[in-house]
Length: 361
Image 1: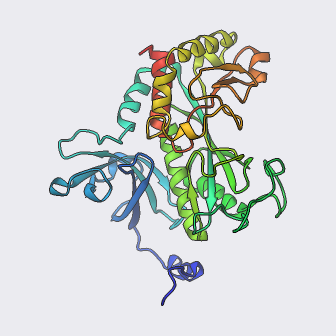
Image 2: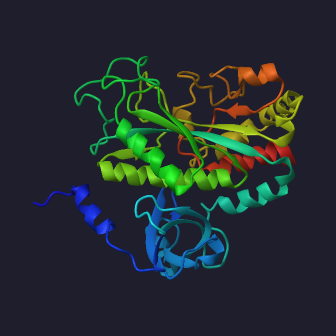
Image 3: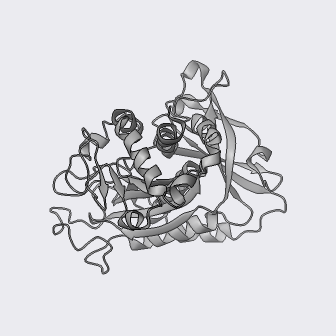
């Protein structure tokens, strides 16, 4: 029986073939019906697109992505952002799209549409975001990468930002992802090994308004593609291993123009007060299953707050909202919302934060 695994080096000779002038392979990306999966398909363009509106609207079978009935399955892809393609390189592009239904209305999992409208209303405050995307690398059998097959690694402690083959697993995947994101034009700004072995984090930002969601979704797509090349799986599950192991979040750093100016700490504290009155609303927006995924992670243990309680504090990683110590000392800066889950939709997260703290909606 032929193996399902392929030798990735064989592909290189085909990628090195000359591509006809003016021909561009455009990989269209979109969020599927789960609200956390990303799909893609490719088409040839006869020009090099410089703006997403230059790319044609396309369609796909929504019944195969849990987004439509088979009897009325056509869904539409509206290009909204363009990035360089780090896999095919050259003039080839990744084209991020919004999904629309047959009646021209946004699909249920198209959170970008309403997020963009909110960011337009709040643009004078120039909302900046930085999201810390945690994830876990798994073997093909679903077991954490590098873990003993019939046991567990040593307790947490030496793995966070660790160095050495006995402390970190999968660094080559992380390095490849970082370089691929830089090539693509993603606002990636850092990475590190996390507390649980085989768990990593990359950071995207600072990105203003709608760009946060665009760049994080493309970074996720690139991560899954890189993992595919290495024959491993990436999971964004917020609690991939039960027991005394850290979960995975998407800590969201946030500031407005007013927060970044002198005496901005008072504006930050005002925003935290507003957030305290909307805790349940935010918890529902912070994972695709309206809090059910995050419930396994936000237990009050392993550097998390309880999902049932709102809290805030300076340098407190067990609080819902953390004010960095440097911000408290400077008197201006940003806050960190530690509640969003690793599998959150960044459009939903950034939208609800701006609605609550800027628009008072």
